Amino acid sequence: MNIIVTGASRGIGFEIVKAFAGTGGNRIVALARNINNLERLKSVCETMPSGKDLEIIQVDLSDMDGIFSMLVPKINSLFPNLDILINNAGYLVNKPFKDIQRDELNEMIRINLMVPFTLIQSLVELLKKGDKSHVINISSMGGIQGSVKFPGLSAYSMTKGGLGILTECLAEEYRDTNISFNCLALGSVQTEMLEEAFPGYRAPLTPEEMANFIVDFAVNGQKLFNGKILPVSLSTP
Ligand SMILES: NC(=O)c1ccc[n+]([C@@H]2O[C@H](COP(=O)([O-])OP(=O)(O)OC[C@H]3O[C@@H](n4cnc5c(N)ncnc54)[C@H](OP(=O)(O)O)[C@@H]3O)[C@@H](O)[C@H]2O)c1
Image (cartoon, rainbow, N blue to C red; front, side, top):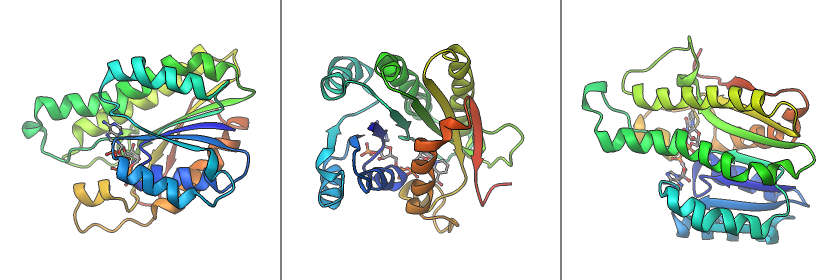
């Protein structure tokens, strides 16, 4: 399968790429800014069944022009079709509503919402060439209507809620194609993002545990789900 994972330099994305590399027959493109971490990922995967077919690309996804001028042409040159796109890259600022700065708000909207929108839009023709393609948008429990909300996460949760609605809309708009769109709303996972936002909090899941679920869902979930926002959480009711 031909696979793209954003936010692959650490946390859940890093483990998603490792899990895909652990199965033969996968060609994986892993995206993030931190090239040292991406190179570490490449070396960790080197001896795995699909490790040789892992391409790391250093990219700042907040540079929309770069997505069009560099990233999309590069992906088109690597893949004849795309089977799985996992929009996992995320950005979180935990601050009281009144203190959130304009640049922080812009960055959350850009990374959590505009980047998935733009990547899907730019890659939809490649996704159409697949057999049964699957787009997975990684959201958060905070983005689910009626879930418990946390102070400090207004902007972050707003963007993640939007990502869920985008998923529902695209499933409808592309209903008659081979592409399925689903959104996984994660509960807490012990990553650097979580530690930075909530120092000292201990999550019930490791990135590896969550990544294994996401990879299994990416491969099989489109047989059962389309246009769904699915809570994947032990922590948040
Ligand atoms: N951990 C949790 O408890 C939790 C709960 C609910 C939802 N989620 C969601 O799950 C996803 C993964 O979370 P995580 O905890 O693994 O986060 P993380 O450890 O902070 O990793 C985020 C990833 O996004 C990438 N990224 C951020 N800004 C980027 C940019 N401008 N350009 C390119 N890549 C960028 C980072 O790479 P670089 O810095 O190298 O660019 C990194 O690889 C996120 O969407 C998050 O919102 C996490």
